[in-house]
Length: 236
Length: 293
Image 1 (cartoon, chains in turn green, blue):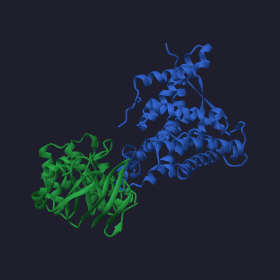
Image 2: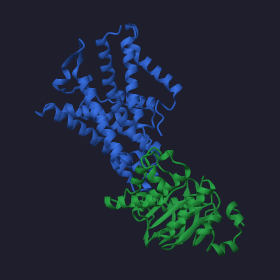
Image 3: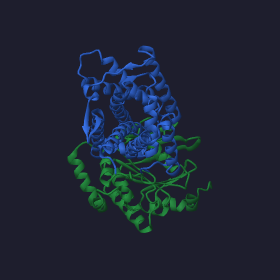
Image 4: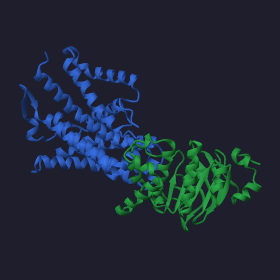
């Protein structure tokens, strides 16, 4: 479904990606693991069109995404839940969701989607007219995911959904990601929380210094890769 | 005891001048909010409306139509400067856009000097702008009341647009997190183009009342409105649309207090007093009165 081949990208003067090749197939939940600064977020920004790769191919359903602006990429069916959630705190929960559905023009479908989100995230119905900034961290994460789902993505990209969440909320969020996956959404999950990610992923890539260091199923990775290096970003 | 008539006159003066300043400040901050660009060509949007009125004055059109056309000229100029000048350098850097805005402003001024005249030209005004009404035994210019009314209606419509339309929600979102807004599918060009068009609409409308006060237009007329708009947004808080409106009224209040109460010998220095007070406000509230998000 999504295929990256030899993608190189810079973040300012820093070379952040040095030839990354990954693939995500329809219906999969793929985890992208690695330490801070390994290039995980840069990779997602590059796929989403925020950064432009200076080399390499990015193809989604056989069509190139390179050179497309972010607003065009979401129309191709890729939705992003960025690091730190990036909800709009001054807007209400409802307005955040409404913007999530910006590319969808059918009002009936929009209302149906809203009901679907309320079923998945009851708290969002409760807080519908409240400013999003008043939500707790876990609730904001739910809003960010719901906002992305409102666009009916074929592929959902989640950047560090565990960031800043209390352990109990964390489990809820991961249970939700698993639930979304089971309902058929293809997911690319970027995480530092290796254990939780491997528990729900079909496959995973380990990124280190801007390159893929290892890949495989969770079992393979647990057997063959020193997990401490994933956390610490060691070059071993 | 406070004289009721004097109070009415003072309040009308502050509100009419403040409405004008609020419109101008809002027009500047709507673009700043999204691009972080202080558009130094903003004053020229006022200027072009003045020349539009001047050029239309020989025509038999009713003044209201001339006024609407002048506003349209401001809107078009604002939108076109975005398309032609700002869009090509947008991806480069903020500095490039800032320099571009100086260039656009200078070119528009030079065009006015070259094709019309470096000297002042008379701007046609409607009959009602020279009429007066009597409130509490005081003579109040009708144009001041019209300025207040038009501004309140325009600000109200603008608030409704921002609050309830999808474009308005997108504008507010983009002013906070532009990249995220784009990642949801809101086109950058739509948001920025709309912001510039609204900026022109507010500047053009303010221009009608600005020229209602000055009566003539020169190529350099944009400098003072730009300064007023900029200072108002700085007082009110650059990150908040409400702040720009509040800042406009506060600046008008300060200016009117000095105009009313300074001894005649000091009146010619009232601008100095105004800006000294502005500096004092900023010393205590460096982010402006309204902190925004």
